[in-house]
Amino acid sequence: KLSHIFFQKAAFTEKNKAFEEFKQRNYEKSLRLFRLALLLHPAQNNSSWVKIKRSIESHQADASFKLQKYTQALEFGEQSYQSNSTLNVVSQRSTDGHLLN
Image 1 (tube, rainbow, N blue to C red):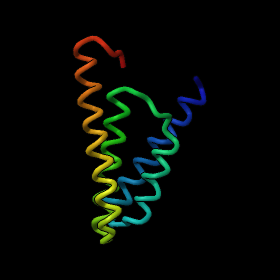
Image 2: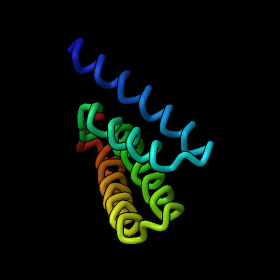
Image 3: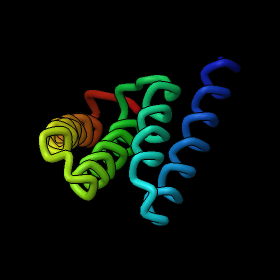
Image 4: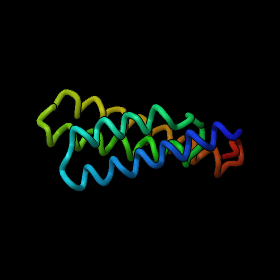
C-alpha cells in the first residue's frame, strides 16, 4: 500500500510540473512530464483516476498541436475521448451502485 501511495504522489508532482511547463509554453518538456506522470500513477478503475488521465491526455493533445505534431495530437485526442467515454461508464455505474470507487 505504501508503494502505491508513493507512486501516486510522485505522479501528481510530475503532473503539476507538466502543467507549469505547459503554461510557460515549454511544450516538449510538458509532454515528457505528462508521460512520466501517466507511467508513475498506478492505474485504477475509478472516476478520479480516469479524470486525471483524461486531463493529461487532453493537454498532451494540445501541446502536440502547438508543436505542429498533428498526427500525435490526434492520437492523444482520441485517447482522451476514449478516457471520457470510460469516465461516463464508470460514473454511471457508480451512480447505479454497481461499482465502488
